[in-house]
Image 1: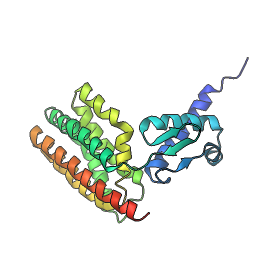
Image 2: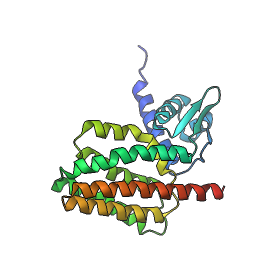
Image 3: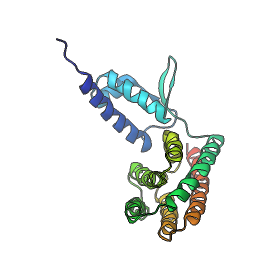
Image 4: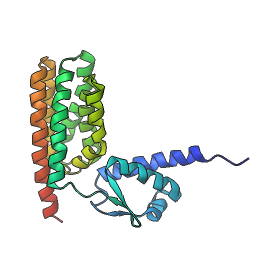
Length: 228
């Protein structure tokens, strides 16, 4: 009877996916860089099959893309047009999510929301955000908790469908503690509106937060391109 190695292969693919995802979000690879499967296979000490499986999954996040006959590449930085389109979508969805979440505030929700706020504040007080993954994880947790609290599966599903495109956006904002400082303050303002049971204020503050994040991302992009 043939040995079934599918579970082991799946485990390897999951591990490779997690490692590559972390490297992509930490800026280990330059935008547009080629992702060589044999090289990655040697680096992670696994066969090429789980590497291919992990890259195929990452393609769905928008962090990598595949070119026929050429292989996989790190996604380029957003163009200004792409950034504007993404932020337009977020401006439609996230204030609405904040409004609905604000109508359903519970002590448990507030306690959960305070955790990523405190994490981001801690990062903002560091001289350097040592791990960009810590930054985006705290930011993602904050926004995801609000989406979940909205209790609107259609709005939440639309937000989550942006998935890796939001992660691509976060690759703009990786120049240190400055953005974490702004984001932490803005997150706290939204939290305070939830505490005050003011859903309309929470929605307005979320709108301001998304617009401010867009402006910071554009500024970061110009700095990154100027240093290349």
